[in-house]
Every structure is written in C-alpha cells, then in structure tokens.
Image 1 (tube, rainbow, N blue to C red):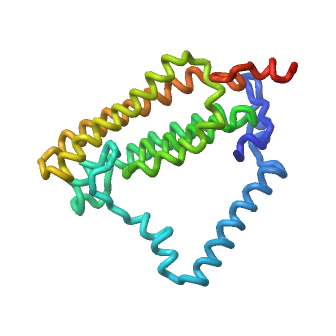
Image 2: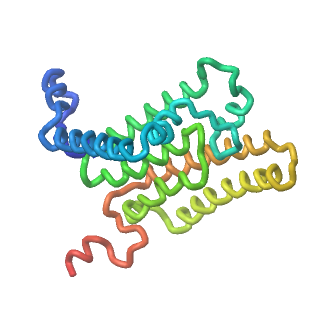
Image 3: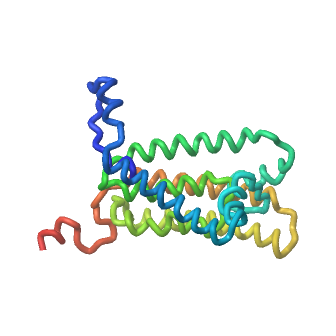
Length: 234
C-alpha cells in the first residue's frame, strides 16, 4: 500500500541520484506511515491501560520466543519438534525467513507500486507469510482467502484449470488431515508421513501461487458474464 502511493519513473537510463530521490517518501506516504504508527501505539496504550503487562506479553512478547512443536501444516513443524530446546541459533528457520523476505520484496515491487495491481499484492503477501511461516493452521487461510474476491476476476485462466488448482489445494490439505487423524484419534506413529504431506502441501501452495501470478491480468473479467468494458458501454 505504501509503494502504491508513490510515483516511480525508474528505468535503465535513470541516473543513480534521480532514482534515489524518486524513492523518497511523498506527502501521502508520510501520512500513511504516521497514521499507522499512531493507530498502533494508541490501541496498544489503551489495551495496556486496561489489562497491563499481560496484554503486552500475550500480544507481542510471547510471539518473540514462541516454540510450537505440535503438528501443523508448516513444512518445518517436524524439524521444530525434533530440535526443540537443542538450538541456540536456528539456521533453517533463518534461511526460510530470508527467502520469505526476498519473495515478499519482489512481490511488493512487482505488484505493489501501482494502484491497479495493489489488490493482487495484498493477496500474495499473506499467502507467502502463511506458507513460509513456522506455524500454519487452518484459521491462517482466512488471511488470504478473505482477499481473494478482490482479485478473482483478474485471472486469465480456463475454468477447468482453476477447478484443478482448487482440487489440488483441497486434496493436498486433505492428505495431511488424514495422517493427522491417524495420529490424534488412532494414536499411530505417523509423524514422518505428516511431515511429508506438509512438504506436498507447501509445494502445492507455491505452485498454485505461481500459476495465479502467471495468469494475472488486471480487469480481465474471469467468471463474469460481461467483460468490464462491455459493462461500461452499457
């Protein structure tokens, strides 16, 4: 959202100084930044006044040291389970977070700098955050599914392909849930199979996102009876 409020005219012929100056925040970006900071601190102070340190701990501090080793959709849950209290520095999670940051940066620069493509950037960002997170449960999916209606009509994709992507997402998730059921309700030692299905689910999410990025066409009109230009003409 911040990037979409700027005006960037950078190309191969742009001088270094001109490129750097174009990245400086404008009035709208400064206003957005300060409004977010003021809102965050105001709400935090209000809740702290009501509930004290308990609110700060449960809302912020706890997540800095959180170690969730229960089985979940995350691709590294089994690794976290095996290495709990054994590592002072977690290299695997650091590498995963690095790649997550790089992808978010690329997505933001690609789709987040223009108002017409901003909704897709807002959709892609929570997908990446959820897929690469060290903890992933079903309620996390609402983060990006709630934004899907903003971009669903902008995919130049066949209905059959869209349906297959939907089936892939559900089936990879269902396969994980099957082994989770065996663990929880049948008490079977299937941790390794749950982890393998987590890898499959991770790959499925990345593949689906890649296909959506590939087929993204702002204003295409997927699933609409009339194209956007036809609606305007009417």
